[in-house]
Length: 254
Figure (cartoon, rainbow, N blue to C red):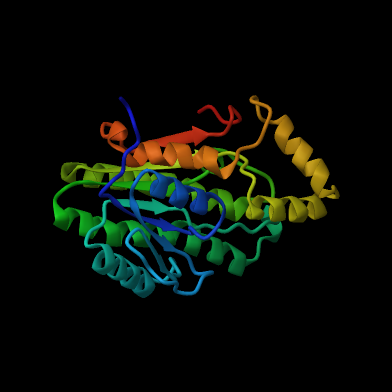
């Protein structure tokens, strides 16, 4: 019988305090994994045998290295990394502020690179393979108005995913990306408000516009994304690497 059993595996989920990241962490726990939630918005919490919290700014190499060390000291190993931490800023391309561009690239792209680099070293040393899953976006494959810095950062995530997949394949470390479409999270709800203000529309009009673009007729829940991440973390994806998998309800098909 098929089952997504991750018993005995240790996973790190960045940006795991809420939204897609929390759904992924919860799904891993349901599948028997031990999970470390790395997020800069939380304070350190009491750890237990299956769940560990570590406050981390993924754009800072010293904090990433400290996070990896804390997790491996606590759980003894590392098998799965999910790079989910991300932010968005919105404005028309001609008005994007340099500090907003830099902050978006630091978290969304540099953060993925730093975490992959640190985790891959541990996985290589263990000599038992591993799974790295980067959360990109359909914005990593398309262009969207008001999202210039975000689109650039998510295209870059797909690029570094492909490079890492090639370089880490000899160590049996699979590196894939998930490209969510429109997901109902706090970040998306904030984007609707800001985007509506910039376009002269209200948030409800943006929400209806979002749903109208999805062939399946609805936007995604965080769990829709977590389901695919669990598959990529499991043994059933052992022959997949370097992929950018759309989870968009049909909105993006390339």
